Length: 237
Picture 1: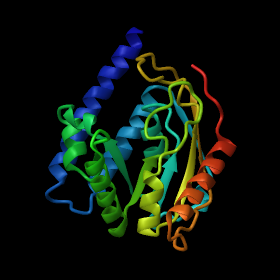
Picture 2: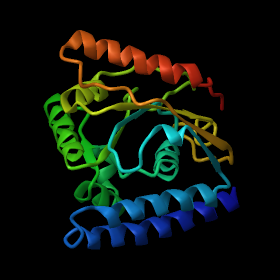
Picture 3: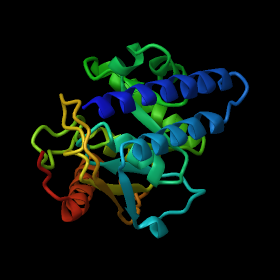
Picture 4: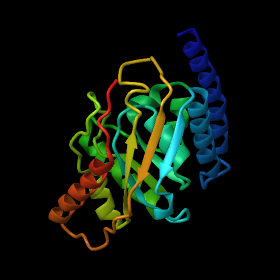
């Protein structure tokens, strides 16, 4: 436990310095490349510090220079560093408003190139998806967790429509991503971090250009759910 605390303190220091670099870069680096670099370095340091190995399967299915909407399941805070470290595309995260209250790191999230969403305010949530659509139009990829929040029991939860509405509106291919083995690393409400091997499985991009109505959007959601469920492993603490 003492070693875990030391590692958490180390990550706190790393997070502080990378957040400062990210904040300083914002006025001078409008493309967000430095901001993204900080996020990727932060992710890799976290995984390495806690002895977590990442295995990415299916990278050949996506093009590095192309932008997508990545949709994945969500089981742990470690899902975010896994995706940022495992997928080489320039990915914009959609994060919950509560995280922006954290000093320095939260400020970097709020004023940087990620997108804040207020889940308690439906109108602001819709505006957040509009900002995500704008990011996509500027050549960014976006990551959304289809369940809306982390699973509490390690099982795949029903999907929410937001990611699929965004995909249809943007007419950008949607890529299913299955994340396995993160639930037991850091279950929700726990600080007991345990090393595990994370499996990141990337599915085939699904075109959205022919979808025009809510029925097609619903079918897209069900299709993505089937792909993620096909590879998903129920996770236990």
